[in-house]
Amino acid sequence: MVYPDTFEGFMIESPQQWSKFSKKEFKPKKFEDRDIDIKIECCGVCGSDVHTITGGWGDPSVPLCVGHEIVGKAIKVGPKVTTIKVGDRVGVGAQIWACLECKLCKSDNENYCPHQVDTYNAPYPDGTISQGGYASHVRAHEYFTFKIPENIPSELAAPMLCAGLTTFSPLIRANTGPGKKIGIVGLGGLGHFAVMWTKALGAEPYVISHTPEKKEDALKLGAKEFICTKDKDWSKPWAYTIDFILNTSDMTNEFKLSDYMSTLAINGAFHNVGLPDKPLPQIHAFDFVSNGAALSGSHIGSRPEMIKMLNLASSQNIKSWVETIDISEVGCKEAVERVKVNDVHYRFTLVNYEKAFGT
Image 1 (cartoon, rainbow, N blue to C red):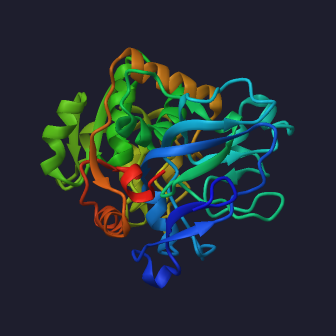
Image 2: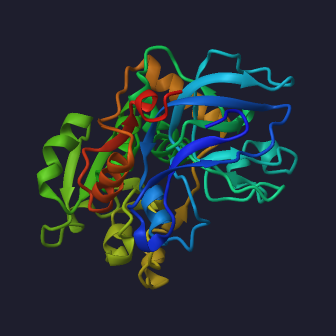
């Protein structure tokens, strides 16, 4: 590796061999005035990584280095960077660039910018394909680079940068707070954050899951109730009760959505952040009418929401539930294969980058 001209990462060559990683060099985008080079310390493993490398969300650009829950040290900053200095411990999530000029960007909705660039598997305006955090370094725009609070360990901060923000943003936009009942569908990497954020914001979390074995974890995380969808007529006692449902499951295509919609209070919403490979199931218009319900979704979150989330985690000592794995060909393979079958409690963070890259 000859930094800064090339970085090094663990990459896949095809979705047919989606868990076969090999260490390769790649060229980053051109360094610009508001860019920051980050020497990576660790990176979370996200369900998005698996959906991408398997081709579930479409054919990836290969060779590809995934990973968008990145924590490391800023080692170079552009001349127009004002928010980060060399030596800062920083994080980068699932978005790495946007135009910052359109009406969406100017209204703190840069996560919906039509010109946005994802942290990996996306083309920059110059045609360079972005590469992610299973790598020695990442080059990021300062607007999408965040200081990590001192009291949050790097391996726990990493999953917050995608899974954390993806659940925090819709909760904030739904005005989650005291007096609100929030349903969280699925208790996994996304769902465990949703429970902790909901409780920290003063609302009541209700975990809705088909896995009764997760009840104990749900209550430890702060859930007020555990609702098991395997129970007969499970939704009937909860009719017209829940103000907002945050669906973190990526198997919604197998749901009987009318049951979930029926639990919503008047004008409640069933909001999707879990993104299955397959289309959502059919639903009748009448399933929305009885309680004025809505079906919605969202994409990660904004910079102000990321900063607010990290400050909340810091002030309330909120800790991700994380297992660590050393980054290597074998480690990357183990991590993505276990995420694919939900064999994780509840997030993985890849660590020991110094050993892998010698940087």
